[in-house]
Amino acid sequence: MKIAMGNDHTAIEMKNYIKEFLESKGYEVIDFGTNSTESCDYPEYGERVGRAVVDGEADLGIAVCGTGVGISLACNKVRGIRACVCSEPYTAKLSRMHNDSNVLCFGARVIGLEMAKMITEEWLDAKYEGGRHQRRVDMVMDIENRS
Image (cartoon, rainbow, N blue to C red; front, side, top):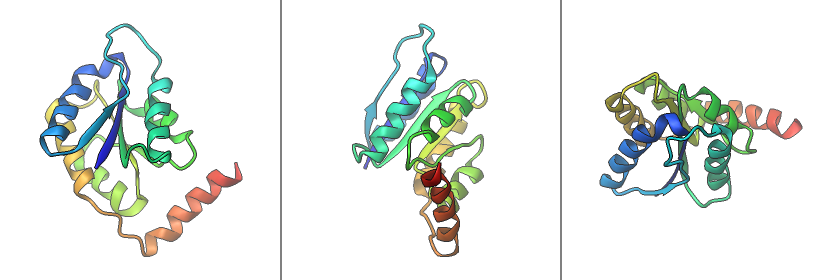
């Protein structure tokens, strides 16, 4: 499985930590950066991650900025992305099971490295349930298609 990763200047350490964790689990990581501590704009990296997922270059995406909010907004502007910001594992798990999220976001200034690892693991281990949830996912995607 391929995972696209992107981050801004506030989240280099966290991105690298999660990248190493993913690679140790056998995932292939496509790193869209940044790897510079120089101030940069998170929308650029959120869009790169989102486009990689919808274009099929990656199966899923993980995007990190200071809070996770800004980069998730950028990811969600890419048609077909369902990015979620998670600060604990339970929300991450349910975002996959119920919302079929395809990009995970979190904040390097909000959670620690170990929590990020737990969130990532829970998110990747969860499977979309479909069924009664599919109607709602379809409704969300319909809103996107009408906009």
